[in-house]
Image (cartoon, rainbow, N blue to C red; front, side):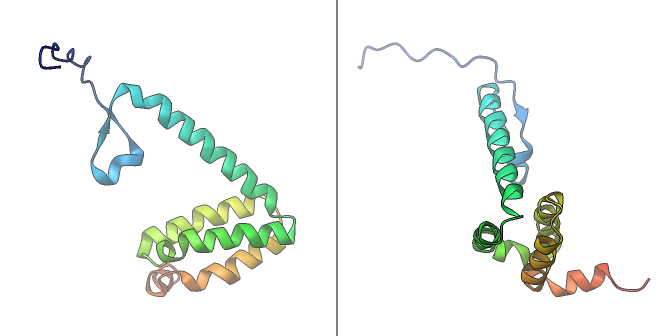
Length: 124
């Protein structure tokens, strides 16, 4: 071990910006690109499953329980929370089930930062 040669130098350190890591001001290596693509495909699959749950009341309840568990604190975080709410609401809306949209609004709008929400609807 002591006589082992040092590891070879890393290939080009050309870095790629990752939107996922934007908040951390981080960069990723070229080898990580495949991972990021697979993560996006997985997210797309999850979104599709979420949308497919909307017509069935019991599956929708389970999906909304997951949203509440994972997002309730994030929904309360100002403009970012409202943006997340709108993103998830868009998924519900894409299912084209009015009952699901109404249920989502009724259940999750109270979790939003009410000051930010009122600023959106304040008369100009």
